[in-house]
Length: 469
Image (tube, rainbow, N blue to C red; front, side):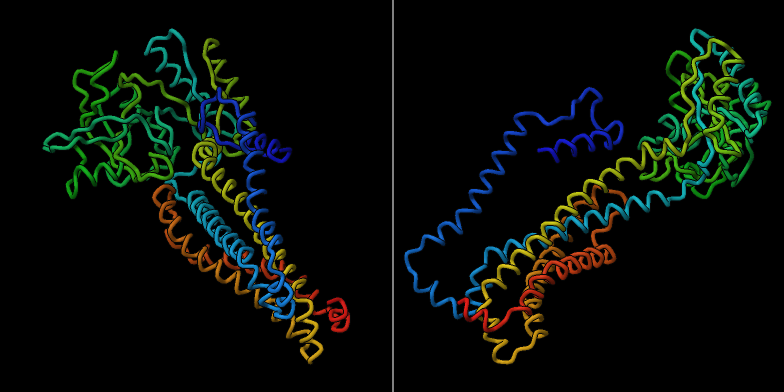
């Protein structure tokens, strides 16, 4: 119970954000505690019934004659114990392979090419209550220039999006294209500095000019995914795209159609686990319902400039409400890495417990087998069996149990990984590296667990064993 109390506290601390409702209380409740205690008591009683019934048998002949049958009296009468060890090995391998697969998935996620560099990139969300749209635009323009001129800041830009999570979902239409299904993508309103700061590479056309943004011209830059999906081999430059989201709301446009002037290479815009979606970039000065955020690229550690950024924004307008500047790297770690990392932690914890059970099970069975075969081992050694031969005999018995368990566990892991592969990003239903690593861990632990019983068997003195019997 004490261990569970500490584990629950640790899990509530390590649990990723937005996993459960914030008002949920994570604690050991009395019904759960009573159920667990009852389960432990019932389990103990059930596993105590078999040896209790065995000890009350009236027929003494098999017990007495079994004393001279060596292995028959030892391992072959321990089928239940052997079965438990096989089950422990199999389940432990399933957990190890599952933890390894999740760890490989997390490593692949962390090594994923986002299409841009999130290092030393800061996001801050300034809000101007009761300000007009013109006042908000003027504030953003002034803030971008002021922040961009700060020492240690290489560039500053405004956008309604948040790479690598994209912008706002919208219905899209391309003039001259007839389609029966609904075309959808993202729309992101930004200024002319945004593309260079993030690191977009232009494949065709060009970015907005300062004049385009200042005058709110209906120009658009699209990503490679949109150009490939909706234009195919055609040149999208000069064509027109309609952004359905801007046709509704309080600031709706009567004709939300934009001329495409550029095509940029894709970056991640649907999170890390999903492929990029078609995206349209328009000047942030076009009337939209979303208020842009500021992104600042720094040369030194961005954390050292967060206080300066907040102070500069309040200098421009004392009424501005500024959220705490957030590093894009930290946001990615929080929203994209935290859940897989937590899954790896949980699965690894269960796998670790499984390994402990394997070690305890193998040691217990082999120690009991050696004690039950003390007379047989003594006779063999009296007849000339060497210590190495006795050691190999005990070790061979353990290897058989572990081998059967590993075969069952390998088959089980193939089945469970098929289910995990459907739920978790980049998890393969069969990963030979992970499987071999799990098998190696159990084999090493199994050898370590049966080493001391095997060593004890080699130290049995024949005369002492026979005298004891």
